[in-house]
Image (cartoon, rainbow, N blue to C red; front, top):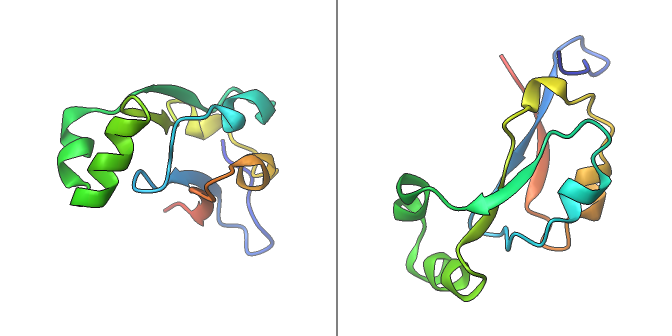
Length: 93
């Protein structure tokens, strides 16, 4: 279960796919194995704007996903480590 903030609402990491270049910094720093970097899903790629699509292709169509978001304890290491500032912690639910 995600860690709650001071309001008691759980936080979860969200990746901005328009910014993410799949550099894996989030994977390396996350102590809870929340992240994986893989080829962007076709549906997610289709949602990108033209410039973001070009950027994605230039970086091998790699992006971060959060298959284990429920394991996140909102430590913020991923937010700090991401060189593109593509990760934010948001309230879930």
